[in-house]
Length: 366
Image (tube, helix red, strand yellow):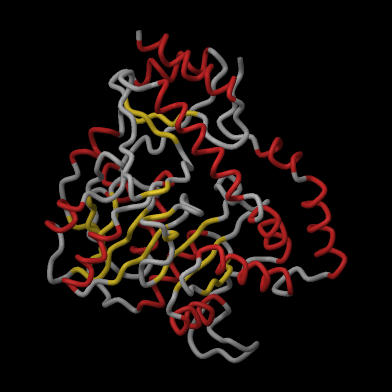
């Protein structure tokens, strides 16, 4: 049985009429940049995240991170603590703002290891980049305590965690500022690219808007040197439709994860589940010493898999032995890069497909 890792076509067919109506509505109004759809999405996403946040739509998740960091005005050359196992955008945003990276190891839940995090805070530290990796919220209570103790800013990278909750509160509402990606494959994905910056500090969000709109809040009034980073009307319209389904889709992901956790217990290393968290399972990542053999057998059976990530950032050419990276040890991230494997995950999966994945993994391991 062939099992897709991701099936955006199936998702589209389930909401086709609403999506088409939304897209053609933008085209008919010629509201391609800015307009009602963008404003409405920003308001609706703010309500979705909750806790009094505001939202600014931008061109993509990478821009969201870069602009968020720029708005914080951290001292040039200061250090930002970044997870060793994450997508490159988390680290790239730090470098592009003239800051240095200190890589922090990950724990069994694949988010920041708190003991390692605290050990790497120095007088040069200015911020913590928190990544809610794979849809699992990081340990925000401990992170916020450390941030307060050492006067550090907190940036939440929520690119993989739309709707995830920590102690009943959605991610994106804890730190000084947060970034979301709406890349098509995300839990909440556009039909192109898109991103958002979220913050409870509305003055800080206005500063982000100024940066994203060529340095001004009004056309041709350039207060600072900015850039062009805008969420377009068509993507906003698509996201508004999908936002209405996100809770249902995330619940299906949790059900798929439950089946994996039960069916693969004792077979492979499973992600640590913390009771205070409501994970949205952007990815379901397992570990096994025989990763490559298992991956090959799954592919032979028509089951699509992924690697997130095949090389942890400190081992990549871009972030190894560079003047903008402070040397540090991250043993878990470096050891696990050869063991991690992402199984198919999403609301597109049927129970039969999930059972097939579990069956093939069990057969391959034994």
